[in-house]
Image (cartoon, rainbow, N blue to C red; front, side, top):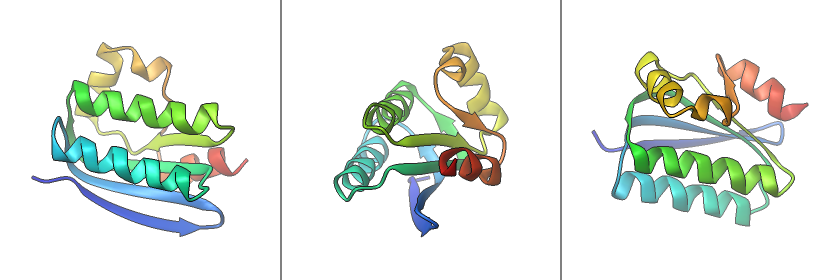
Length: 115
């Protein structure tokens, strides 16, 4: 399944809802381009809602880590929400769960970036 990216903006927070697989190729490139455009447009509070993502490979992990760095190092806030069990296991295995900011729900993530 190709990665779907739905963007929503509310209250100064941009939410990207992802659905599908975040894997090497067009999927990763599309997310990387989308995040780059958000930063270019001045977004500084971003939630990536991942409850619809069923698989992430190393390239997907790379773009998530890069996205975090883009916003965190630029003074913004960035949180991943709705991590599925399978993706959560991958994050734990790679220890990225100790680096990337994770929230159980979108509401929790929005509260964290809005604070």
